[in-house]
Amino acid sequence: MDITKLIGVGFIALVTIVIVKQYKPEFAVYVSLTAGIIILLMTFDGFMQVINVLESYSEKLSISSKFVKIIIKITGIAILGEFACSICKDCGESAIASKIDIGSKVLIISASIPIITSLLEVVLKVLP
Image (cartoon, rainbow, N blue to C red; front, side):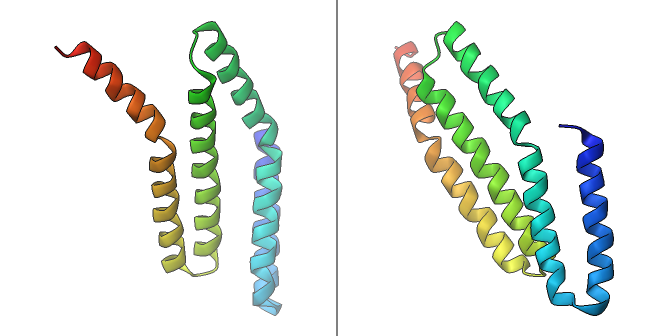
């Protein structure tokens, strides 16, 4: 992944949106959504590299793969939630964006319950 390519896609989308808004404002949302999806797909290789590093270190440190999967799931929820919020804000729907933001935070907390539970169990074992 090259940052110049990401910036290039972003700027091309920006210029296209500015031009399209003058003639067909309703199509600007489609350009924004398409650009966002392209940028997400461009970063997929980098995300996979991070996942591979996490998995290799979890094996070396004897960390349960269950926890690594939870961390990856939480990261995915955060990224997709932020992406959806940004699209909604671009469309002028900040109320929907805030609901998605709250919903993604609730999903993150619920996904992290096994990690929190394990941490509390360790703390309870240490306490007399």
